[in-house]
Length: 182
Image (cartoon, rainbow, N blue to C red; front, top):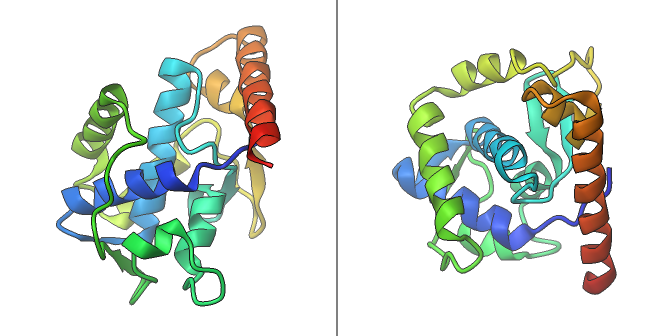
């Protein structure tokens, strides 16, 4: 799976959820909400919002590059993320400042509202347990297993050939984005 991670969009999505939650969330919850958002965007629009990498870990599916931003304190390599979101304290992250939402369309913002309405009241353990029930999740037995676009699409009910075609389109888009980002 090729990716062209969009840190700015991932940050704006995270900040949206943090604002909805009153400015603070366990980072496990935040990672799950972002994963569920990308999953739904792939199902609806055949494109992920963050363009992150997805993996099954012992606590369920994750958005890998976003998790890396959470667990890196930004001291060595400050990023867009670290201007708006604190390093974790007691496994929670807090909103430092709200960025503009210039990367989010109205439809994407509506999706974020829907995801938060459906899952935002769950605590981190309920979210973890729920994401373990997603068909694309596989127990990594202490390691990690990649989750591909076609696995997500098949888990969402797409036929195997259709899922493979859509996944190929997403990978092609990611390849083009990488070319222009370099």
